[in-house]
Image (cartoon, rainbow, N blue to C red; front, side):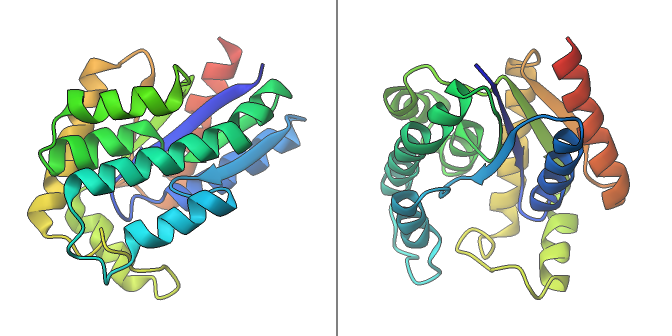
Length: 208
């Protein structure tokens, strides 16, 4: 079996850049690595992603949102993640279950346990071996998005600042609940430092 590593963080935390740097470094060491994302990663899940993140869908109910994420996660897992792990590859995934727990469970107020139960049905015990949480203040993260003209602006980006602060609070709760799995990376630093710190966490994990 390979290793399943997820990257988490609020909007503008730098996950996309960091994940590419980790992939490059691991491949140079001879590892087989695939990079994927949630929601998405495969065709069906990408279609669900479009529905979830479309800025026109402002009326979407919180429970609908949580169920759609779980559905996309299920298809992505069985079609892409599990086969790659079975082949001994390292899977680097931009977001996984922790995003649902923080965004829908905590920030939307649906409850950690309620959202966890939905996802337990979807993932059947498959959890990341390691999760890197890129911690950045909402103010810093959202300002980065505004400066990055190439990045898509989605429905979550336009949520209130208070919502994004709740997301960060939710992640900090998960950090305390799962210290053996989740590693905190200070994403307030410059991107080179963030990438280096994140890579060191992955390399230390692979050595253990």
